[in-house]
Image 1 (tube, rainbow, N blue to C red):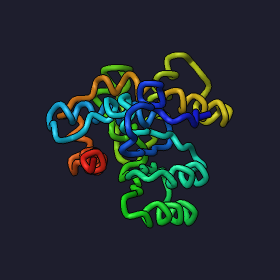
Image 2 (image 1 turned 90 degrees about the vertical axis):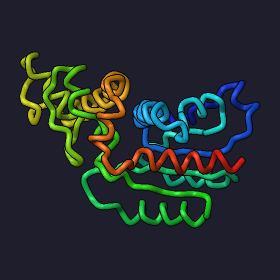
Image 3 (image 1 turned 180 degrees about the vertical axis):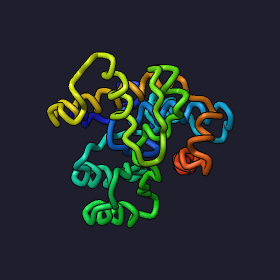
Length: 217
């Protein structure tokens, strides 16, 4: 289960005025976003180093889980700019999610964005995954990257076929691999690899929105 404790709530951080709130579905999403933000910041100093600002307490990063309405509505009472990033998944945006996004955007200084790709692991480059796991995975915008990597890892262990495993075990293995990818494969990412996976600069666009909020003060 995803922890609901916001990131960056340490004793030192609480002495710093809060300047923005950023929400994503899970802590592993933030780990990967932090890594990509750091890569982009190195090549373009106008883009914020999100992890640095989170550690300083200027940005509160909240993993809101899969039932975000109550959690997000609570934070919308905080009078600072806010950005919420939702995984696209495999289907269209639900009516409930669309309603929540409208609720977020009714505040002029808040934004809600649906990822153009299925989920954050889809922003990883196949070469980064191969270097870490020797798994030849074709990373596209819509495939389930953690599932494909974990299947490759399990194959030499002579596990039963993936579709023969218990559904809960499959879900647990995929969730564990998503965490692994956010920690290990993300370290293999470079600006060039991110540019190939994100040629339109979607991640940089999120950072510019956060940077605008930070520069208001």
